[in-house]
Image (cartoon, rainbow, N blue to C red):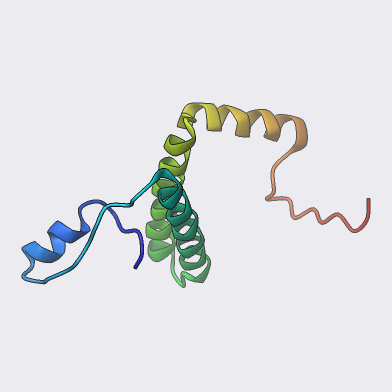
Amino acid sequence: MKLVRDLIPAIIEASGGVCEWRYVNSREELFSMLEEKMVEETGEFLDAVDHDHAVMEAGDMLEVLRALLQFRGISIEDAEQARIEKYNSRGGFSGGVVLKKS
């Protein structure tokens, strides 16, 4: 049992398939399943062997992040502003800096 995109059951059934599905039972279950989905999608992104596949998995990660933000009442704009503020005050991660000891 795993969280899937909202239209997946209809897509399966429209193609002649059969599936069994349900809605989550609580906010806690939804959050837990979103956490699991983010781990899954991040792993798929990291394992992607070509650019196109990586782009598709990045899109999945963004969709899960959007749902997690919505769950927490955070707008994508507020998250982006926080990212910019941290970038401006602390930098990003692309430079490859590794802290050996603090």
